[in-house]
Length: 458
Image (cartoon, rainbow, N blue to C red; front, side, top):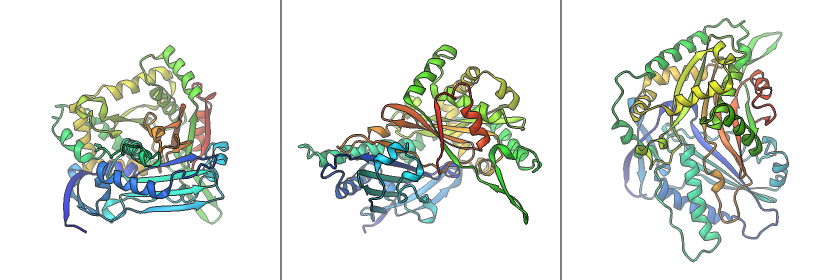
């Protein structure tokens, strides 16, 4: 290997506390048994080629924390780095057709892809990116995982589209070979823009931090006999042991393109100007609040850097979350449209200065401690929404058509809701870890009940 050089990047410790890895699964259907369908050598070679040009940080050989306050990392990169783990598998027992018929239930997906989550912790030597390709009887599955220290889900989507564009020229034997483009996927570009922004004189985020700690303390010291355990936690008992807390499962709540269109018509009538995901988020917040015995419930929405011209060249998705809290009884009784307007205002009404302040607080050790306690507390009444439903995953085309399905295998904490594009024709898949009590509230909610299907997704 050539001599080592280093580069600075940004690992936000709070990001890793919530979601340490960014993973995505693609399934491409080949019902006609087309020859040369997504040959492995081309996939592998163009993957490495695109990594080297578009996201070289993922090829770092090791990382070291340099400054906790700013989430700083030094990435050590060699000019000829070793290849990341890239694996080829064959599974003739699985078919894309069966997965389509079962709406891609986890039991129908290849275990080699939908298996034990791959860890991507850069501080303990885990690989920063892994790729698994599985060849089935009638198609191909791709499992791709990046460390959150390298990029976020927005960056992953952009990378996949670029990778497929480069590979497509090889598969289709285009006269013009496409070279990978440099993408601003990693936060080493993003961080100087944030640090350059001034902080507001009276940052409202301080009160959110204080309330976050108060809510966590209240939940942590709640009487274990209180029925609050039912909201984010279930219990298993036997005659010889104390009740043991069981982690609630991840549910995939799916809304078809037709269902989204209907919710959009409701939105147009009751709260025009509010985004459809924010209206759905309001319904989720209500479903959590209606059964909560706690006096305060939390809502957090992802803030997107691209909404400001300063960050227009950054292709990542979300950069932080902005928290707010309301009295539980007010949330559960507030009309859904009114609550959606509150969420919409919270998400869009932030300045670059406030955004910079939140980022700086978000990467502080004090905030990380509060957030870790909050995330690890199964009883905290909250919903944290990361809206990725418009990311261009379905534009990934290696020359054989767009994917039949793109899945988002997130290991999310309690109350975390990840909105993901459902299909090529639209719709939303919501991955959410909550108790079955909350799920019952969701399927009976007036806005959602006729348009949502739910399966356990782990």
